[in-house]
Structures are given as structure tokens and as C-alpha cells.
Picture: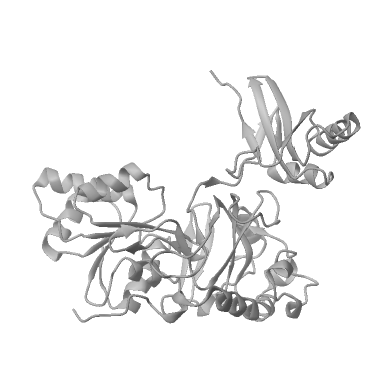
Length: 421
């Protein structure tokens, strides 16, 4: 097989300042294009596209949450008025559980999945066993588009039928598996049961569920030399992906080149400090389905520096939890946005975390507030914050001041510490 470049294109190794400048230069055009769609025209009403040319300006725009899609799509079938390409001119129309409807355009590698496949070493002439579902949902077609761009042959295996999966691997000798990690484990176990040699599968690109370190090690110990995961969604496609250097996994996941990523405090649209865990918010430069400050519901954090592989885009930790921490207290729901509103009313609060304790039917709430000097604040401020808790949540809560930096960096705004046994 002829030698090919280490990187898919020169975008991956741009100077970070050049990338940032290029993304900011593209923003006004993206906003104007999005506003041609009825849904975005409503969401971005009054926004002057030419003014949105910096991260600070972008951060002033409203967040649209993945959890909003179902209601938006009911109001404006099928895509909530968020697509700029007419429905009948699209390439595929998907229906995910919910139902939530997702479009696919006609451009090559529309989901931008070639980058994670290329990063694990897949090239023209390789064979990929595609074990994502081909039924109504887009994941399998994300892989198809990438393989078409790279020149890889695809075994459209889908999910289930582990014995047939093993037979396909035994006979067709794919170089790579793409799908969920748990299903690959089932296939390997079935191959061992059948006495089948599936050692051709040296690469695995995994997604759609968590990959614990123990499972990654198990897959490597059972013959898959290169095991990487990627982070994608049915609305956005590829968001970020892992890479290797000399066969060693590099820390974090590299953000895709057509994604502008923010990490915000859960329940808000406010960007957090670099390295702080928060909700992943994506602005996607997709000409058919532009997404502006689209909150994924996932928690992550940025990592400093550039990946050892030489790809220079921002890195994130990967998935570290869910941002929706809505909790029921004494029969009433408390939302992260309410905690953010309480903190917003009191500038002395640098960071807040609502801790729910007690036992069933005997709940207690304490708002732990990071402040500059926990000993310097008056009872008057505590009473004022208590009043805000009651006003915003309709529930009583206590207040505790703690030192700056003492709350865990885990993205939690609401901690349910109740005992259920």
C-alpha cells in the first residue's frame, strides 16, 4: 500500500491562532446563513450577523439545547426550522428515538467522520466492518461517508448476529471494526467460542457508549492493537476524536476542524475557565444544518497544549458525565439554571453547588458558595442568598461559604447526596 500523509489535510496542523482567526472570520457568514431558516430566524431574532465575530460576541447568543429539539420539531416539522436546505433536496432523513429527526446533506463526508478514521491509520484499500445500526439512525452512514472519502471498502454489518459477524471477519478479513465497544467484545468472545481467527481486525474506532479503561485494555489484550474512541452525535456528526503516536494513545480528544467548541456552566450559556468541567456547546459550520451554540447535554473540559500527534486543535477530556442534573426535592424539580440564577443575583458568589442531603421525605438543601473570603461576609448576605433560594426554587435552603477553588471540578451544579437505603 503506497505511503500516504500522516494527516488528512493541512487544517489539522494549523497554528492555533490561525485556526481561531479563521473560525472567527467565518462566524458572521454562518450566522447570516442560519438566519435564512425560520427556526434560527426566530432564535436569533434581532442579532446582527456582522457583529458576531468573536467568542465574546458568540457567548451573548442564546443556547439551543439538544433537549429542546423534540419540541422545536413538533412546532415546525420535521427539523424545527433549523435546516437551510429544503427537505426534499437532502440526501437522507433519519428518525432517532424520541422521535427526533436528523438530516443528512449530499456533500462528501457530510458528517466529517474521515478525521477519526484517518487518525487511527485507515487508508485507501483498507476494509472496515461497520457495526453501527443502519436502521433509521445516522451512525452507520457517518462511517459510510468517511470510508467513501478515504477509499475504504465497507462491510455493512450493522448490529446483532454475532456468529455472522465472525464469519464475515474470518472470510473478508477487515482491517478495522467501527461500532460500540460492548458489541466488539461480544464478537471477540463469539470468535473464541467458534475457534475463528479474526486477527485481521487490528483497529477499532468506538463510539455511542462509554469505553472504560478496563474494556479498552481487554480489547487490546484480545488482539486489537489500536483502540480509539470518538465523540459524535446524530445532530452534529464528529465532534472530537482520539489519536495515537507510535502506537501509544494520546491524552484527550481532538476537536474537529469545522466545530467551534465552548464549555459552559451547566444550566447557563456562560463559558467556564479553561480546564473547568462544564457542558459541551457546539457551533457547527454545516451548510445544510447549521447549529449555533447547540448544547449537547454532555460534560467535558478542555486540556492545555497540543496533542503529541501534532494535530493542533483544542483537546477535550472526552465524556465525563451528563449536564442535566435536574433533581426533585420535596416533590419539586430543581434545575441547574435555577442554581445559576441564584448565583447571578449575588456577585460575591464565584461558583455555586447545591447539595441535597437527608433521607426519603426529609430532604435538605445547602447552597455551597465559593467566595473570595469565607470569613468576611455578613449574616445579611447569607439571609439575602437564602431569600433568593426560596424565591427561585420555591424551597428553603441553607447557605455555606467555602474558599475559592474548594468545590470539585466535576461540572456538578446540583449534587444529590441523599441516602436511599
